[in-house]
Structures are given as C-alpha cells and as structure tokens.
Image (cartoon, rainbow, N blue to C red):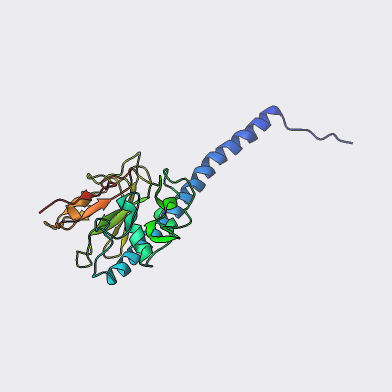
Length: 238
C-alpha cells in the first residue's frame, strides 16, 4: 500500500502566508463595508431628525426647537433639550437616533427612554448623564430661514470646516450636515465651500457664518463638541 506524503514545513508555511495575505485583504474590506453601511444609517437618522423638527415647527409657530427658551424641559445640559423637545411633542422619541455606532464616545448601549417615564417634563438621566451625542444642533431657527441653513451636523466640526480628529464621530474624515431644506449631505474635511454665507451669499467653510444674524441663534453640543458647546455657541451678531 502506497504511503501518502504529508505537507512539508515549507508548504505549510506557504499556506499560512497565503491565508495571512488574504486576511489582510478581506478584513479591512469588511470593516470598510460595515463603516459605510453605518454611515447610511446615520444619514437616515439625521433625515428623520430634520423631518421631526419640521413637524415640531408646524405646531410651534414655525419655530424649531430652541433650548434657550425657559420653562420647557429640565435636562443636565441645554443640548439635551433639543431632542427632548421633539420627544415631548411626539415628533421623535427614539433615543437611538442621536448616537452613531461609529462614534468612539458611544458605549454601544442605547438608553431605553429619552424622557423620564414618570415625568415627561424631564429628560431622562439615562439619555443625558455622562452621554456624548453624536450630533450638534442649531437652536432658535425658524422655517422662514433660508433652506441652506444648517440645522444639525456630525459632532466635532470646527470653524475652519474640518472635523476634529479626536472628537469627530468619524475622526477627521468628515461628517454629515442636515439643512433646513431637508437635505442631508456628507462633506469631507478637505472639501471647501460647504455652506452659504447668510449675508454675502458666497461660499464659506464656517458654519456659524451660514446661520441667521438674529439674537438667540446658538449651536448646542455636548462637551466634546466642535463649534457647539453645552451652553450654546452664539452665531455672529449683526
């Protein structure tokens, strides 16, 4: 009976090397595919948020959520009032809409509720305590403002139009911006002329210059925000 020959050491090492090469090719491809799929989810969530904000405005004298107005809700920080107002109005109550699975600051646990189940005038601590929202929001907008007005955007956007490599949801790759007209657009950090200057009509990379020159316009974000801040970053005055 003929004895079968086993693999030599060189052959085994060759097979292992081939497997390693294939893994090096396939794994980054799969990772990139998952990231692209999640970005599609993020864009869809922002689309739902702007629709909810527009519906909210229809019942609030054409005004979108404004965390600066007193006597509305209670929350740990003003930024949480923006989604909280949508939830209390019944426009959007899903907490998961405000977190991206790609966000390094997201722990993977979606809070069960946005508002306190026992008190709907209170943003639930599970949603706000120690949380970093993946989006920043503009408060004080009206439906009569230009359709090119930014309403919300991926956290970490800086005044120069780039995303912060440490605090950006997608690092310094870029991010989404959702406009009052309802469109959601992805911009890379190195793209120029992302916004329309509210006074000159010229292209600008500074989101603040694309906001209405009106008292009460602020950009809200959690502590790792870019342009926005927990207390609200005011738009430039007239």
